[in-house]
Length: 139
Length: 128
Image (cartoon, each protein chain N blue to C red):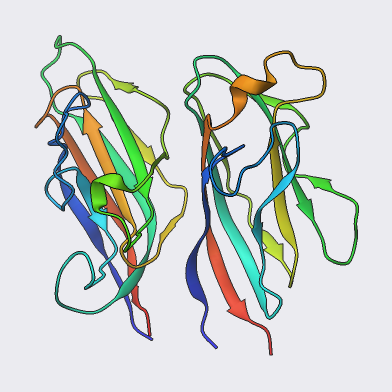
């Protein structure tokens, strides 16, 4: 059964911690979701994933105020809309990153098809993230 | 049979919703199915409470009824903090990981329910 080593996802945190409306989809509050045609993306293979590393970098210029981030794990549940699925924290609450700081997490995290990693922040478009690992077909 | 990447468990310790779990009472977070073996790769616990929460985590083997502690008994996880145990844990059929929040005689026990998020990551494999 094929294993694909890859950058599972990379981009910027785009959801405010205080947001009242959360866009539950990749590119919104979802940083990465293990592929599941019943959820995201709508077509393609069903895969599980092993996250081997997550990195978060505050790209603000020196002297800017620290930015806090929150990162969650969300279990896939076909009976609930994405925003209704319980979020479980996987990093410390309100983790603070000063300008230029990078935080990495190299603890293995498994995801079954449709499971997702969510993130939010107190300042959007300044926290770069990269999630690395591998995906594997589920049959 | 191939190894399956699995979320062995996720939720909140002392979850008061269905099925309800009482504070200061051990209950299973994960039990290996009778026909499988498992490797727990990592366990994450985050305290979302405004104060420290004591909790206990043990391994219960199907062949030995004595609990084996996985962290110090009644360890207190500070507010907002993350605890990771990432030493691989090999489990046989019906072996289980049990946990509880709270401790004997603690007047704040009632406030500890639903405060520690957890995610257990690992793999399962059929035993032939």
